Image (cartoon, rainbow, N blue to C red; front, side):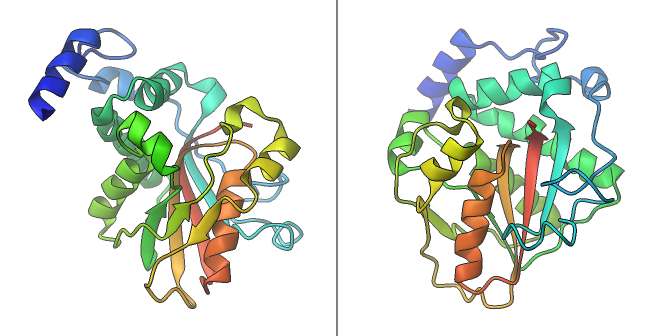
Length: 230
């Protein structure tokens, strides 16, 4: 079945660079070097300060502690194309170029992820079945292997919510409220958790996940994303 699936996928979406069209690669080395990686981070909420950590005034407003991302979503057409195909054309193997983009950005910023566990924003089981995989989970596994951080599905999505991209900031918060539950039996008390997603926009989803993880005892929650869409 896997070979049949790969044959159909190769027929519908032949492997070629999303930027220049070079065959047998989703992202050639030449085009990868053209991607403008983020090198300056500010508070994820207010945009002030220096670094990916929430500033002192915003720490009281959010359960999230840090946000690291590779690119600005609106300034990287190549990455936008890849993410869209990854999510909506179900091209599973795109986890590799996206994972490499994130790792390259981390290395460029001299940032080495460190945590007790790494997890991903969960999809509802119905959406996972439709897509065939959770795109955030595959990227999290990629990062887990690179930095030797244990991966675990710490959260479950109990509500099949409306896609966030169609909603404004306040609607996103209401839409996602109560959608996640921490179902792991792993001890999370005083642990540092990295949570992975593909795109961070208003942070509503990541904050909802971080809130649930901290309810279960987590001390610090760091978000890693491919892109930030402000």
